[in-house]
Structure formats: structure tokens, C-alpha cells
Length: 461
Image (cartoon, rainbow, N blue to C red; front, top):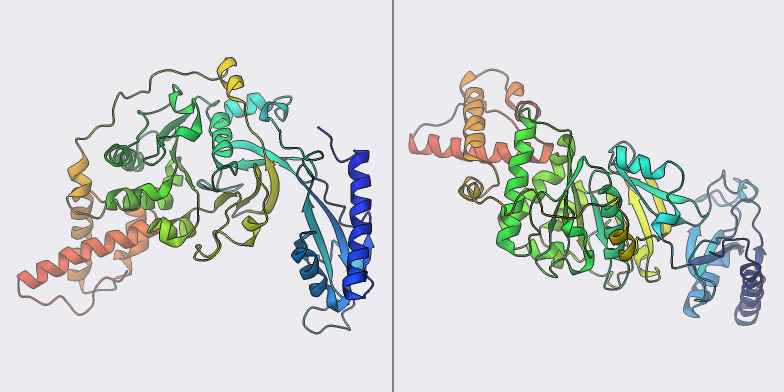
């Protein structure tokens, strides 16, 4: 790897700064100050991008627009934080920003000759890292950020996110990053895996669906996906009722829009996204676009309950889910250039790493073979399809009885609401609201058939 000490890169940055200054002076007739190297924000010198800090007064927006139109730069950061650039502050000036003038960090991609695209994960795993992956099993190294530090993403809700969404168009590096995450998590024997892809039949995940740690066979039809998810939902309920939570289950659903028209699949994904983390069940969801029309009902689920992201290049912005896909994805290069986000960390720009398939095959760290189950059980399908809401009839009956006591009590109804039901049945917040709606619809029908009006004071959601 070239690393940021490369003389070629330093000369490239100097030449780029000189060229930018000449273009701006010629096209706009104004003087722009470049800080090279910047005193507080060092020049961006990562695997795939270069950058400079630029100060241009109140016409800086016009300057950046000019550079973007000519393909010479992309906007990187506007108005750096006070702790990064204290020399730019003068609170007596602009009443809106409190800044004198405006600073930007502009960026561009390295040329192919200077870029580092081939970052193999095994080169990042030094010292005790292999042992940590095998024992902890709740993190993976996603790649290198701009200062050449490995980016560590975690399934621990305090340090990362229990669920991740991998977004990127064809050849963007999305499937490679997904494979990289699975391969590292598969090093821990306490991690179990299941794979679902009804559109491309898991063609982007190489040999990983053949890992011995798979719970069942790859689900490549909607019927198999439904059976696999019903089993996973049953496992989650069993864990809430006192079953073992030692083993983590990671459900990998590639090409997520392929399941959008199956109501049972959608409802179970929603249930697991909202409550699975509490019983060590995680989701890795992947799609090529964040367009709301393509994702269908999954759009709201992703926005509400899946905070982890690896965003690769996607050309469509119009119609995308709010907060899921923004201008960051439009300026990414391919392959492997991406943003990593979760609820606890600021967005990190990185070059994703990968394991070569021959390395996965040749190393004895991974075990391939038959899954634990030869096929997904089908005996519980009616349990989930019969009432059309993803809950078992037994669970709804218990909720109906509980809410009925609340209606008949005639007392304060706070003890029969969402929070109590959430704790009583061991389900998440979104699930508890849906369960109350399902139970109350049954109660309303009971009152209607019995021609009896419910008491005035009803249990509140």
C-alpha cells in the first residue's frame, strides 16, 4: 500500500491546489486561500480520496459550485467545528453562523495509479484480532478510513447497531462488504447464520452459505423464505419465554425487495427488527436502491428500527427513503468506497476491505459442511398465516384476556397498556402496539356480537 507518506501523492495534492487556484482566479476573478497542509484538518489522504481545506469568504458557495460543475471537486464539509478550526471564529460577524467567512473541505478521488482499492481484511487483523473475533463474535473490521485506521463495526447496541442495512448498486462493493462481515462473524462458534435471497439466489456471497454454522439451507424461494422466517420468529418467542440466548443468530437477507409482497415475511422482519436484539437475533439486510417504491413496506421498517448502514454508490436520489440515502451516496466512487453509519457513531468514509475467496477456502479457520437442519420446518405456518398479523393465536388469546380484564375493571387503565404488555410478553415497542390493536379488534367484535357496549373507560394503548 502507498500510505499517506507517498511522495507521488504529496506532489499530486500540490499540483491540484495550484490548478484549482488558477481556475478560480480565471473564471471568477477572486482570490481563494488554500491551506496546505491545513493546520487543524489535515489533508484528506485516504485510500481512495484526496482533499484540501479552502477559505473563500462569502462567495465560497459559488467557488464550490464552479469546481463541481467542472468535475474538479466535491463538497466535503461546510463550516468546521470550533474545536477543529478555532482560528476561523469571529462571533461579531455573521449573526446566523457566528463565523467570519466560510471554510470548506473539498475532495476528489485519487487517480487509479494512486488509489488503494485492494485492501484485504487479513492484512488488518494483527496481533490478537483473530482471537477476539473467535471469542467475542460481535464485531467485524469493515475497512480503512481516511487516516488509515481500521473501522470496527459492532452488533452491540451500546457500541454499534444490532441490525445493518447494506445499500449499493451493482458492482459498488455492497455484496463484497456483506461477505466480509459474515466471514468475520462466522469465526465465532456462537454465531449461527441463515441466508435468504429470492431474487439473485445468493450469487454475490460466494461459498459462505455453505458454512457449517448455518441453521438451515439457503432460502431462495419466497415459500422457503417464509418458512425460514417463521422458524426464526418461533425461536425468538422461545427465547423470550426462557430459552437459551447464548448463541447469536444472524439472518442475512440479500435483495430485500424480493420479499416486499409477502405479508408474513414483512411482518416477521418488522418483529425481529424491533425486538430481536434483546434475544441476540440480528438482521443483515441488503438492497440495490433505497427508493421507497422499490422497498415497499420495508422502507418504514428500515428507517425506524435499523440504524446500522453501509452505503455504497447508488445513482438514484429522487424518491429515496428519507434518512436512508442522501447526497453522500451520489459522490461515492466504486468499488468499495462507502459510508458506515450507526446510531452511536458519526458517519465514517472508508474503503471497504474483503477476504479473497481463495483465502476463505484455504484457511482452516472456517468450517464448511451441512447445515443443522436439512430443510426449514413447515408445521407452524398456519400459526402465523391464520390471523394475518404475524402473532400466534395463543399469544393473541392471552392479550385478549389481559385487555378484557382492563375493560371490565372500571378502574385506572394504566396497568393494562403498552408498557405492561411489552414487559409481560417480552416483545418490543412496535410489536406491543400491533398486539394491542389485534387484541382490541377481537374484543370489539365480541362486544358487537353480544350487543353490549364496552365500558366507558377502556384500556389505553
